[in-house]
Image (cartoon, rainbow, N blue to C red; front, side, top):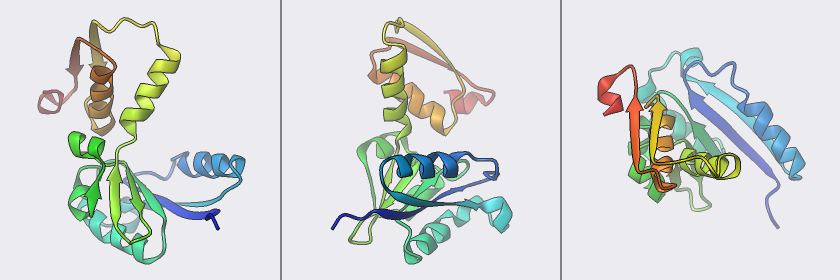
Length: 166
């Protein structure tokens, strides 16, 4: 029998205003599934970003099916996972953790595929010879990667932090 109820959450900093719970729960309802989506805000918990490993272990032990990961934990979570999907490994950032039936925690990065699909659907005729991108955070790196994958010849990344843009 296929599972129809899922416990999921979002780990990050300052995520109280996030629309993720409503978005995920509503879409699950449309798909005939039941999602219980919880925010796990490190600021509210009073723990540093480096506690992400403890939070992932606790979620697995509590029976969560998966987690979304956001700022500032997308890179820090990697060392606490059992495996990485190829795109997460290539980017060095994880935004989704799936707890598999065997208990393994596998990190994914859906920012690349999400951006690429949206771009192909809404901007299919946009020229890709020279692209200027503003922002190089966790999602920014994924967007730059996706833009190159879509055929961009040159991507110039501008960010307030020069090291991050490089």
